[in-house]
Length: 321
Image (cartoon, rainbow, N blue to C red):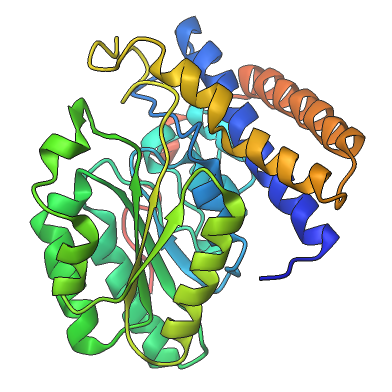
C-alpha cells in the first residue's frame, strides 16, 4: 500500500514517541515517584502505529495493561499521559487511572485494562454501536498471547461473528504470556484456532511497520465491506520485563540485545526509507532530537504539576443523564 512522504514521517514520529516515552518511564520508574505497576510497550511500536495510522477518532480501540503505545498511536496527548502516570490532577484521567487505566474517549481510546482478556468484550460493544450507526467506523481490541486463552476473548469472538460486527481482534505475540513462553502457554496454532471461530486471519511481521500497515489495510477492507469481524496476528517482542522490576530470569542471555540489534522496528523503518531515498537520515535524526527534548519537558512538567484533591474522589463515578 502506497503511503505519502508525510504519512511516512508521521508514522516514524509516532513510533519514536512511543519508544522515547517508554524508555524514559523505564528510568523514571526507579525514582519512586510513580505509583503502581508499569508495563512497558517498547519493542512493539510497529504494531500499534501500523494499525492506528488507519483509524480516526470515530473508530474505537480497547487496550491492555501494556497500553501506552496504543494510547499514543491512537492520538492521546503524551504530555497528559505522563502527568496521568505521575498521578497529577491535570492528567488524562485526572490522576486517578495511572499507567494501566489511561483512557481518552474523545480519541476513541476506550482504556487500558488490567484484566487479561478484558478488552475484547468492551470492543465488541463498541463495534455494535458502530454497526448501529452505520457510519463505517470500526472497533479494534489489542491483546497478547495470554489473552488469547481467555474465555472472555472466545465469547467476544463468537459474538462478533454471530452479529457480523465491524470488529478486528489484534493479537500481539511478544514471546511471553507474563513469564511463560508462548510456545508452552498456547496449546495450538493461534491462527488456526482463531479461524475455527469463523474469523479470517491476517498476519504481519510485528517488527515491520509496513507489513503491519498493509495487513491492517486488508483487514479494514474486509470489515468495512460488511463481511463481519476478522483478526490480525503480529509477532514482535517486548524489550523490558512483564512489569518494571521483573528480573526476567526466563529470558535467554542477550536475547533482547540481539533483537534490538537485528530486528528493531525503528532501525528497520529507518533503513527501508533511507535506502529507498524516501526520507533523508538527517530528517529522522531531527525528529529523534525533537521528541527526546519533548519527553524531557513532559517529565519536568509532570513532576511540578499538582496532585488531585479529595474532592474528585466521587466525581465521574456515575453517568449523569
